[in-house]
Amino acid sequence: MSQDSPGIDLETSLGYLLKEASSALRTRMEAVLRPLGMTITHYSCLELLAQRAGLSNSELARGAFVTRQSMNVLLQTLEHDGLVTRPDRAPSGRVLPVELTPKGRRQLATASTAVKGVEDRMISALSPEERALFGDMLARSIAALREWDS
Amino acid sequence: MSQDSPGIDLETSLGYLLKEASSALRTRMEAVLRPLGMTITHYSCLELLAQRAGLSNSELARGAFVTRQSMNVLLQTLEHDGLVTRPDRAPSGRVLPVELTPKGRRQLATASTAVKGVEDRMISALSPEERALFGDMLARSIAALREWDS
DNA sequence: CACTATATGTCAGAATACTGACATGAGTCA
DNA sequence: TGACTCATGTCAGTATTCTGACATATAGTG
Image (cartoon, rainbow over all chains, first blue to last red; front, side):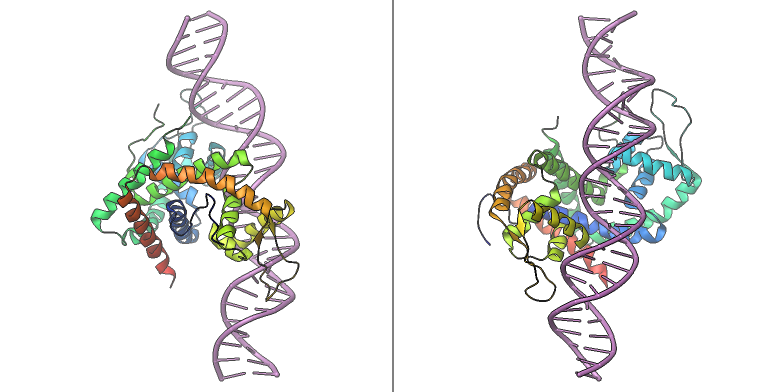
């Protein structure tokens, strides 16, 4: 039971809590996006494109935290459904800039409000000052985890 | 190259930051567990069992944030590899209590050390006082996200 | 100019997790 | 007792993501 070793106490582990929070957020987002026929990656892709039009497949993949292979199959579906467009040939190099269509923009609008509701629910547990600090601590944690990147 | 920290508004979203932090933690954990031939779910299962011996398949699934079907597949592998044991018949009801074998305990020991190193790296960006507050904020966020269930 | 390194898009296969469904056992309540 | 509800373990099929690999295009270096 409570044998030591270099064991990690999951009850107080910040890593476990972080995963737990991320899982809860993911579950809630899936719940509100499912009626809209969208997955989280699907929504993330559209949201990224709305803020930075012309992102490439690889850039979208990094922004949505999936591999570029996974993003590519998603983009094929989005393109087929008329939500995004890609040029037939790369304007420069091999990079294919992706853009939202009006239809994609409309779909994003409804999804964005739904997702914002989930995020608002989450941060409702934090005071305005705490929200700033929370974001700052998250950013510092991210930086520390990537510190010795190769 | 515009691959690092583009000035998108998503960077100020706490939901996105949370997902980003979770992704960074996941990447680091995968990096240290891969040489040991373990996945995160694999490790999580062993860690859960070390702290609470006799957990059922469904309980392990909830603790590792996967479905009980996925956990069952993993448990079959772990059982085949001699890392955990399950009784042939349920002592009560249908619940099959899972237990670590000495071999499983040894494998967990090395993995736990590696994972602890990752977590230590992450919280090194936070002061001791901040760590407590960080955990508290995460717990409150989790509670807020789940109180919706009604 | 060649050579190298990096990044991209893409294809194919494998690993992993999920949804749906079913039977079983325990607990609750009329 | 019997009907109902709930949770569990399990089977089957599907879906999504990942790993590995390759050719190509750009930039940097000698």
